[in-house]
Image (cartoon, rainbow, N blue to C red; front, side, top):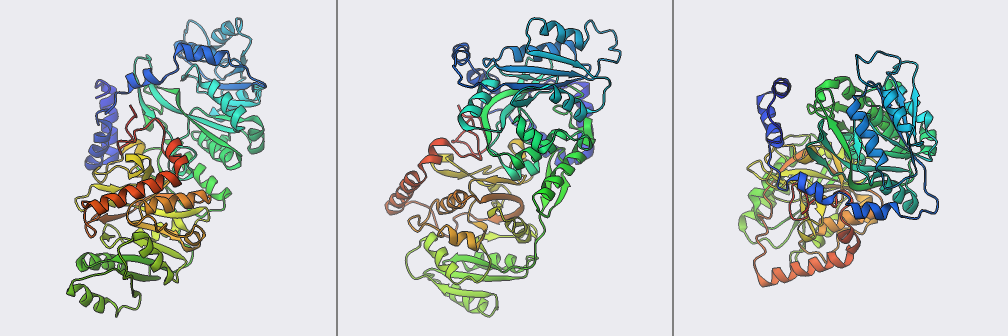
Length: 601
């Protein structure tokens, strides 16, 4: 357990228990009490900038160093918090900055404090002209107060810092580097949390590159945000009507217009926790979550997307329901060899879905059992079912490409014969609503083994060498790292055991690569789709069971091993760039040997 039990935490736990109920409460408690595979404190110390590195950064010669204004709305900030914040800014290895502090409590009594915010800041400013202070006439609200601080800024770029938080000494250096080398106009970093006394850093939040569907599920960007001033002028400052989620709303508006969003995969921001902070106690600001819902609704509206936003039981997390437009035909492609019982379960669940406009193309591949052909004869009487034959050796890519030739639908559902959608009847409608969005190329489902442990919750490129499924064996209902096992997000790949794709996109990328007979063909297809600029979406609300590889058997012969090695070489030669640089929807500080978002050692 990371922290000792206190009366405050007991009261907080009781509130959460009442909110979630016993079963769900203990699921979430299990996530929180999961022991660290890699202890974070030593990891952090090993990865933070060392004195030699900071010295080198400080001596960097910049042709045109951008002025970065750090804006801080202050309100009765505790003296030690404010002093530590200012110290963290003054320690920056990049020196072309200004710190703009707008004090909303200057005209109010401060209950016998030794020094007011004004006295603290002015004392610091006397020795450093980059520190600026303004006493506001009154405390308005967080949006208005931040906008007052923003009005003080002279910088070409503006970074936003809370009055009780801290930044690493190389934070602005990495901003300046990305600005000058990549012409970034919207930047954010990784972050963690720190106790009030600064004795313990914990809960590292290692983020992906810009991820629209993840952002619609949770404000994963939060800190440390830096935006070009001209972009702020274009989209407008913080909005009073969005108080509580003013940063969430601003992040949406700015990201919608940004030309180059850059994520810096380093923990450069420390979010201080105390009993009144949202970081430690989400229940302290319930109004913020309703405002967050409106921020997502605003994003959908501006982007012309229909969607109904739902506030999830986990505070700060959301689900967007994308309604299906019309009734487009979905062509389901199912390769099959024998295993008629598994196929029957698969077809039964398909026919039982809420979605009616289906054609089912079963690609028969060298079955041998008599009962299989008897079953084929039976299901051929169903108007939606079409049986075609692939008489050559097993090649997953070629078989599916062959099946697509017979497809007349606008959408293609690639489905293994050992997948069953028996958890809920709306899984296909759920996937179609997401896939209909114009920016989406393909959608993958969340798959479970029959014992209700996760088989696949999306795919990360690089895991295990080439690619692998995430959260394997995590019990159903568990949330995983930063809730990523249970919220919608964009990924680089999903498994084709159950993948819905626009037929036009499938044709555009040339279908499955037939050099990949068994392994990585779905990953390769997803990479081709991403290369064309489409999103691959992991949709955890489409839940199905999958008896993985049960119908194909293990890779246990010399021939199969040799084929697998050839497929590895194909991926390495065709996707060298992403395998070297890393999956942009993952984080380079996370392990490629584990599938649970563990820290890389």
